[in-house]
Figure: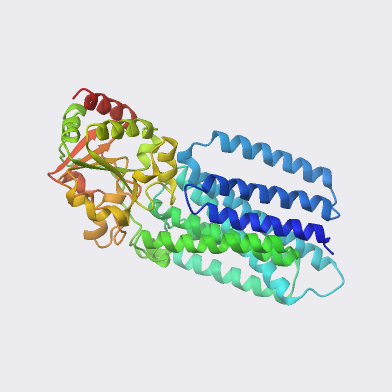
Length: 460
């Protein structure tokens, strides 16, 4: 029986998690929300040590110390541009941990003399299968985002059949585990989940990986909630439900922002459709200019809209971009940032990257708020973005991003594209806007080129 004081501590931790989730819904309160969530997690862990009779306390403390060191060092060394990879990695670890705990509980339950309640076995099978899917799937998404493997969809003849067989195998083993709870079935079920997770994510193209990360995050939350039921831990049940519910909503919102159904995102490549891209650099002629010419276009405009992308953050050019915007505004030019929901690698990623450069949040306009203003823009400056302004989303059925809502940069009077090369974006297809007569390309490293552009604007 859990002591009353421990139950109150768990309740306080649960409230912290709820307040943290609420705080993370706004950039102004996100930092405090994150801190409150961390306090809740520490409170929950400390409570366990004093409320439960633990075995192997020394081993547990050593594991916590090692994990803490790895977490602190990793968090400090990982660049903000690599945050989605870190999220994928941590999410996978959570799913894997839930599956391992379920296997340990299965071993303990099957070694006892009494019968195990049927619903406990259902929750155990669910946790093992879905936790393993979340772990292996998250590892593949990490490899894709880190470019340890190709970001293009990976398919092979018979993949749909292999996926279907793996899914049926997982379902069949889950039923068998409930009917005949033995350890070997649980272990085989875990391996089936690992295979299913890999087959689930391999066909997903790079542009859709963030959606899959969110989906797998929801999977991890659900496994934690199921594990909480098996362990009889209400706090795990609450925390897992919060993660599962928020991850599900986020997945739906991201899929809507991409103009795609979740089924199409996961399985589009299997039918040769939506996530396939060529990925080759184009040799078609384009119009290009130097920093001095582009500076003149910007300095004599009345309205400028900035479209930042992931390439901006990779080049660490956001600070110089903010200086350029400040200089343009000092000249009386109206400047706004147009933020696509998936401008970085995850929702809100670009907002955080620009916040690092002290860009006022009021200057950041969401796609729905600014899309109608592009027609009045004299110049649109696209920095490190590609897919989010690609007209193929509206004009080319069968393209990887077809149906995805985009920023209407093509409606502006002039478009300036800052690019390192003619390589396509994350979706792996050409952007016809690059070849539009009103588009000027400014080639070079974003940070170096942005510095030259800032100097040229200051000299005018």
